Image (cartoon, rainbow, N blue to C red; front, top):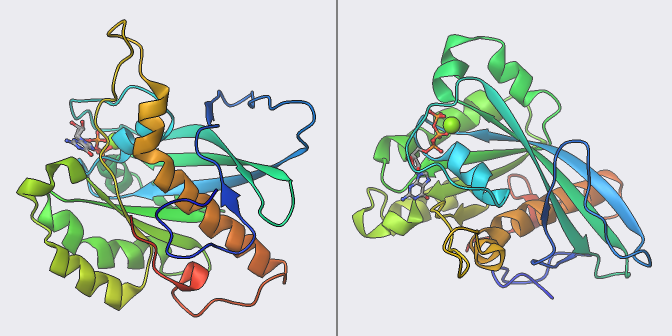
Length: 250
Ligand SMILES: Nc1nc2c(ncn2[C@@H]2O[C@H](COP(=O)(O)OP(=O)(O)OP(=O)(O)O)[C@@H](O)[C@H]2O)c(=O)[nH]1
Ligand SMILES: [Mg+2]
C-alpha cells in the first residue's frame, strides 16, 4: 500500500501505517515471529522558533498526550518512535527507529553546545514553522543556513504546524508556492492537537491519532530509505536539493 500523499511511488519502499508502537529507549516492538525484521536507526533534529510546536509534534508522533499549554523545553528532549515498513521489492519488513531530538529555542540560544550536539550525526532535520506565526516562516531560510548549511547531505523536510488554524493563517498558499519553488524541499502540514478519545472519554484513540501523523513518519521513512539506497550505490543520485527528486506535499 502506498502512502496517499505521494504523486508517484518512491523506489523500493511501501509504508504501512497502522503498525506503529510507542516504546521506551530500551525496548522495541515485537512483530510476529515469521516476519524477518531489520532495524534502521536514525537521528532526527527538530528545529524551529519557540512556540511553533516542536514538542507538541514529537508528542503527537509518539502517540502521547499533546501539551496544550506552552511550556518552554528547557534543554534537549529525545523521544524514540518505531515505525515498521514493508519493502515493495521483497517481503522484508524494515523497522524504522526514529530518535527525535527536540531542543527548546531559548536553551539553544543560551548554551552554545546545544546546537552542535543536536546536529552531530543527524540523519534528518525537520524545519518547523507555524501557520499562525509569520516570523517563524520568514525565519526558515536563516534556520536552513544555520542548521543545515555545513551538512548538505542531510535530509531536510519543512513542516508547517498549527494547520488546524489555517483559517487564521499568516502564511498564505502563494507564499508556500514561492518557497517550494525556491528551495525544492518536501513540505508537510501538521496539526498537533489533542487526539480523539475512546468511549471511556480518557484513553487516546490510537487509530485516529495515526491518521493525523502517518504522512510525517511515512515521508521521513521514504526520504531516509532513499538516501541510504543512494549512499549504497543502489540508486542514482537524485537532482541537487531534491531528496527523492521531487517535492512531496500533503
Ligand atoms: N492549535 C494548535 N496548537 C498547537 C499546535 N502545535 C503546537 N501547538 C500549541 O502551541 C504551543 C507551543 O507548542 P510547543 O510544542 O510547546 O512549542 P515548542 O516549539 O516546543 O517551543 P519551545 O520549547 O519553547 O522551543 C502549545 O500551547 C501547543 O499546544 C498545532 O498544530 N495546533
Ligand atoms: Mg518545546
